[in-house]
Image (cartoon, rainbow over all chains, first blue to last red; front, side, top):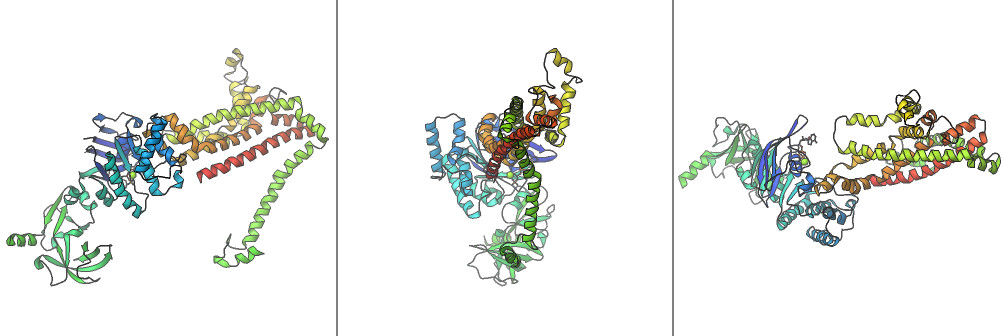
Length: 352
Length: 288
Ligand SMILES: Nc1ncnc2c1ncn2[C@@H]1O[C@H](COP(=O)(O)OP(=O)(O)OP(=O)(O)O)[C@@H](O)[C@H]1O
Ligand SMILES: [Mg+2]
């Protein structure tokens, strides 16, 4: 493990910002720290960087315990949430700052800054001041500035938060490619799951100062380890009385279920794939999502959201439909369990 | 009048300064303001100049170039320069400590810095008499070492420092708070030392505010009367600052000379006012 946190705890007054946080990150990985606002993501990042001291626990970087090491000697690049560019320095000055501190020669600095300017596609903006840049340009300057002194580890705190949706999408893939090109171990913070899923090799889910789950996006999506992870990742609705759905029975110890849009099929009455496994529902609303329709359903008093292809027969608001639930995540305080629709699995086994 | 007609255009009118008859209210307020300033400020200052020149240019020159007046001017400038230097130095590290670090009693410290603003300057003089004067606890020690503070130049400088103490830090604290810690943290993460960060990141941000604070501090230091009067002892040519000199001349019924010397103070004030406006303009521009 290149970066390792062991049982890190941190309090601010009587608020527990980090609660027994442990995780490890392999060299060269791009890891996303994902969690709701106030879940302690920034705190974790700042402790790794040395801007905040943990109350207890150990932090290792490249096998060295860094708890008592000054932030300035950890060799970490940091991109702040609002960039924190040096406002009285030009783009060139900002990127050169770390190199000047390292007492490199003028010639080397010029070369290295030029290299980063090309990498971040900031050509022609060298003489501008931060207030003369757009959000996306500032973000790239902050990124270049952090990379200039050749850090071994790059930390990014919500690198796209202050950028509008369209540019954000472009920057995401740009960031992923650029980090891959440079080959630097990176951790980035976000509270946007799409961003985390799209950019990260691995995701760490935080909630109330604790780590809920670590794993690849697909793995977390398929096998949420905690009730929080099940609800937080993916578009999901919570069902209180899942036993009233056809094909599902009450499982002792599990009172609630999480259902995802992909778990739901909608059929016109009489056209069902598995009539015995379907329940009746009503279309409450239909939203156009660009390449897919999002259908809000009312099934026996429970709300759920399903997706429907534009190729499928058209639905109307208030239409009666047949709803087929393929599977559910059952959960209680500690556990999550995936269960399949009985009727379908029995049928399939008969056919096979 | 054009304004009146425009305001009658109602809520959609291009200029809606106020709800009812805006132009009347506006011009009444402006007139009152101007009238007040003329009566309270311009008229007295003009009178000083007129009085100073009443007995002709020769008398004015003699009064201004009088040996004691020149000495008083020198002492005033000396104590102002010393007080401003000390307070600038103090202001820089106090504002740094208060805005960049967390510690217990920060609020109390911030409040304490403001004491000279709220306390009468006479007390500022009195405390030094109580410490260093004949009745003060430090007096025996000082006399034993041949140091004279009260009724001497050091006392005047101390009193001036006391009254002008908060100006620089008061100006810097809000400015540094608005900058936040992140730029400095970013610099620290790249390995910059504390001093390097201060010079490259903090100072460029506060330089105009600092100048503004220094100017205000100078104005106050030059004009200080109360505190200095208590510790001065009014020894002509020795411990007299310009404001004290004016008072002495006035008490001797030498009105023309008093006004002539005052006009030096007025001149200094005008120079400071101009500098102040330049600095203020820059501060506004930078904090935009
Ligand atoms: N210096 C501090 N003093 C007191 N409380 C703090 C401090 N820093 C953070 N906190 C608290 O710790 C909690 C976690 O903060 P943190 O900034 O790590 O959250 P976050 O996950 O980054 O949230 P966001 O997504 O909103 O940035 C918050 O409730 C915050 O109020
Ligand atoms: Mg944060």
